[in-house]
Length: 212
Image (cartoon, rainbow, N blue to C red; front, side, top):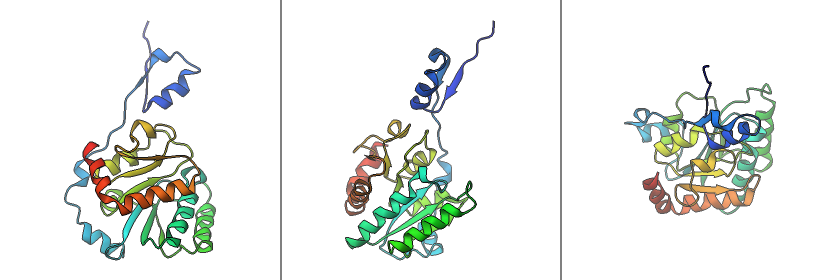
């Protein structure tokens, strides 16, 4: 009799499914990301195209606009860091696909409320994510739930440090204080501190890049 086997993109997915099925039929095969898309990216040209001022740090978030992805946490953290005098541009890539733009507007209203609408930029859906990652100082992913987020692999392939919440398969990619920082979910203070550490201590981030 022909036996079926199934493949998951991370251990977390396998364990979740294995609660209801025969775990021996499930195997983990990790996703990858092509490296040739990262070659010869003109960083200065990309910064100019996006109107990013010189000597300003850049934090990038990639993901659909929804509460699960934690953009609201990032906006709160941006407000904290603004009060500390940090000069950072936050590029949020992704679109509100499920709610017809209502959540996007909610987030934009939040940036105005916390007076960070000049430094939190919503870029919408983009086809040039590798180019934007090239100008980033770090990737931030403050999600409350994840599977095996490919964007973390893309950031690491670009040599960028990662700050992410310890959910789903994230810890299978990011080793805390070795290849990035893992923080609790919905923790604005921890996120702000992690971003500040990365921006103020780029040498530490470079050491982590070597280990990726």
